Amino acid sequence: MTSRSYAEYEAMFDLTELPASVLDCSAGGSSFTAEAAARGVDVVAVDPAYALSMPELVDTVRRSLPHGMQIIDANEDRFVWQWYGTPQRRDDLRLEAADRFLQDIGEAPDRYVAGGLPELPFEDGKFELALCSHLLFTWADTFDRAWHLAALRELIRVSSKEVRVFPLVLQGTGDPVPFLPEVLDELDGVRWEIRKVPYEFQTGADEMLVITHS
Image (cartoon, rainbow, N blue to C red; front, side):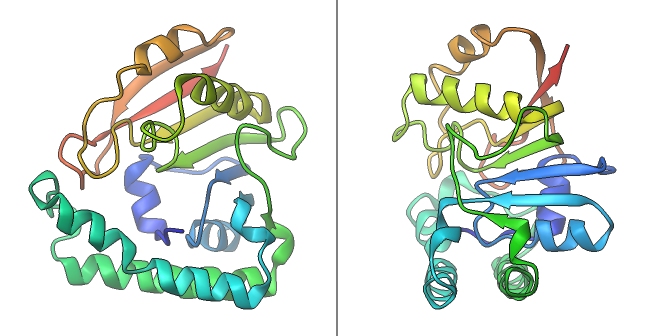
């Protein structure tokens, strides 16, 4: 259950400005929802972990903080540090994000909804923008092609304007996802493009998928 900062989201999704309503899907312990709400955005985070009790959630967030470094240590030749600068800055951002998330979910629990892809508990077109970080394609060795297609169609369903997905490579190794082109070819009624972003941590993971409603 990763905790990512607002600054990381800005870079990963190339967010120069936010629309009035945003969904953060598979949000985990990130602080994006708290900080976007503070900027006046109608924002909702969704994640299966939000079904946990508050003590269980706090424990899960705290225990997950070192996990990312284990993946990095096992694949250290596949990571670059230009964006973060140092491992310490990355750790600081994640710790601050976790603290902000835990504070906000305690104060505004309605912003945090238990649920997960490929079936989300929202009506059609509820959000102008849907963001999905480090789930689709990242875990293509766990979730198959059919699951990815269903998940993308669900994100399209609950968004009215745009879906952004980052990254587009496998976690750890940064290898390409073989079925990515096939999945994109099966999306109907939308336009899509793969766009460079001002963020790279895994080598070669500097692109996001942008899906726009026709």
